[in-house]
Amino acid sequence: MNLVRIYKTSEGIIVQQDGRFYATPAGWNEFVNRKGLYAAVVAELPDMRPLDAHTAEQAIAKGLQAPIGSQEVWAAGVTYYRSRTARIEESEDAGGATFYDKVYVAERPELFFKATPHRVSGHREVVFIRPDSKWDVPEPELTLFVSSQGTIEGYTIGNDMSSRSIEGENPLYLPQAKVYEKCAGLGPCLLVPESPIPADTMIRMSIFRDGEIKYNDSIAISQMKRGHGELVEFLFRGCAFPDGCFLMTGTCLVPDNSFTLRDNDRVEISIDHIGTLINEVQTLR
Image 1 (cartoon, one colour):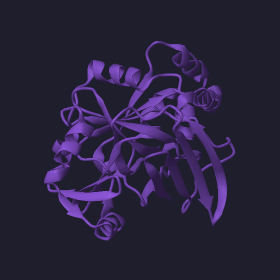
Image 2: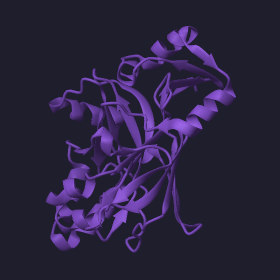
Image 3: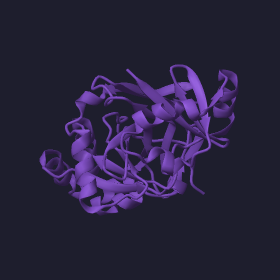
Image 4: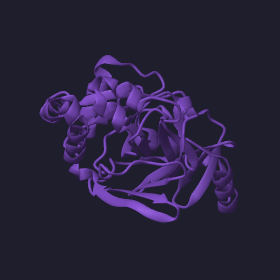
């Protein structure tokens, strides 16, 4: 699988290909928002400044940032059967269960706004749970980077933090359940492959509390009901994204209903080819 990984650090952009590292002074938005991004980056490698592995790895370890510039983050829901079931379970008492059952089989997917850049946390940064919520979970999601022209150019790991108690109270409360300070994690890099990410790509999530694993599971992205191109096409029907955008593609890894996140929990999400995104959980104060 031919690919490059693009890291955003406090010292600038670092590009990795075939175990080699390069630095470029380019700005994030202009560098990533291009149709045919993989070919463009590979063509520019000879003009970039080579970095030895030790220097690059130190820069990544000390100054890694979320791989986002001025892009918006959007999300899709009910794209896996398990997420449909979970949304029905959380909404049964409020009479909203049928909404999620219907959207699972509908032509139009569920798409919603998730975060502005300042509400996004990077690798090893804190994500928040709302102080007015009693039932909170992380949602591990393969996240697409889509150019301003509507082409899928890269992938990263997304942590779609969700208040199930607020959303379950009433489906109209979805924006409050999904959008708040530090409500999303992205990272650790932007994966830019020469061809689409394989269907057998695995997503894994572990949640640690006091050094013990409280949740651990995995799923292949092939279990998605909807295609990535389908989701992007619907998103771009009514919106323009001058710098491109990120689109979380939904989750199938949902802890049992008895589980809720607590302060100091650690969420680790791994996706084949991309890496691992780690976030610590704290209550927003």
